[in-house]
Length: 580
Image (cartoon, rainbow, N blue to C red; front, side, top):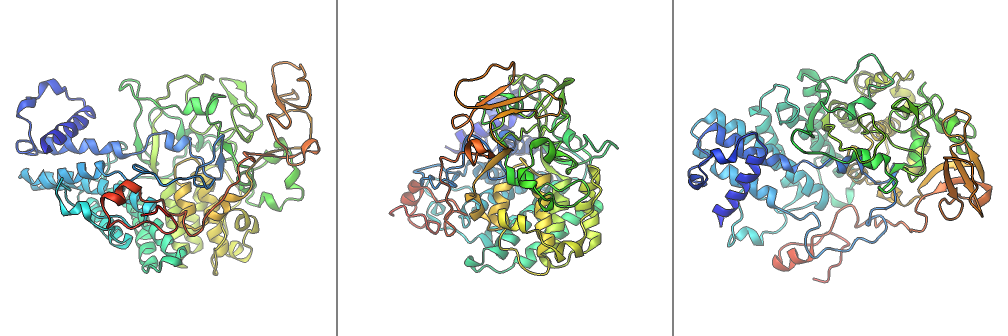
């Protein structure tokens, strides 16, 4: 059986390289004859890269600050304990441990350490996903065979599993090369993952006091130290070309990613025949038509650093007015007045965005064609997130100073030409009640104001980069998922100019559809729902669904039923009743 597993995994590894499989004497390749040379180890470890998420995990992210046709089942109270699957998969780990049990057949210790470091990076990456989803999980550093006692292993504490992840990453940090390689893991990638894991677990333990876990400060210290190591000694920086109006946007639409900021990316290429569908998701009316949610749009600051939600009448500002003089990342994330593509002004669209706030982040190429095959590289780890990890960890530890903010948050703001800097004393003297009420309850202490601001910055900088669910869970903020999701504000029926060119872009009507040309039409009560009907208000998004959140249950997913039947030693997560 192991020989068959090995053959399948070999095929996975070979397909990720430029080698011709027909050149290899396949009949002689077995676990006993392979793993002899550095080339063998390199070839096999190529198969691990399939663990990275596909691009759709980013551009289709739909949690709370972005929303589309659907709302996640767990937020609707509709998630059913699965019989099998549900994320409880172990094939990637078996592949990694299979390699680590055999790499010693290569007698070149330096080569062995180099490629073992890759394997151990991916083992930590694998377990981070499992801990974030399930909490306690069995820890295996060996291949579990058909008759292995490990098949009946209980769940190990997330404390133990986190320690093992850090051990693996420390080995990877020591033995991986330092050269920039955006499509392969290196020392800086391992430091990045260590920082991300330690921040996640440190804040989880701090805010989820119901689990009674110690060690939050130690983990936050490790997160800050790992992040600072890359900041101080690594070859990365924020991507800047002196054009703050496009530098942020252009990070996400390149066929060849910017390696000054992007630490790790997933490659897409016409030459390799590997594409994704970001353009379809942004331009098609039959996609999930995900848009930014209204409260999140409100959280973007003014360009001078002041709060939009402090402006009189902000609640009833129409689109053109609310977009004026905002954090420039808003215009580099959604279509705002003046947005053009292929030289054509494109207004915000209610056809391609559920909320009207039409995302163009990740939209690449020049054609306005939803069916264009998209080969832009997808950033997985980038330096901007590392800056935010450092700032957040220091703030949570109570060690943040103004210099830290100037190195991190204020550098991000400077990149896009914001005029207002985040001031530590001012933020803590005047915490933003809007952020606390709509997104982040539970923050306490003398650094409350600046922690809220760092979370604001993180949400804006990393929107649709696959981090929001984990962020909200580790901060214990799931209860805010149940607020009413909203879209643009319209004062009532009528015609609307959404890009400021004096021409009608949208007509909201009742009764018979009017004929006013090639514009968008929305029938009130059918195509669009406003809070106060014909009297206007914000669009209500998916208001037919009642959202719910079980505070004692929903931060962790359930163990599938079949797994618990096969292994009675697997306990179920709190609040999930499977009848076993």
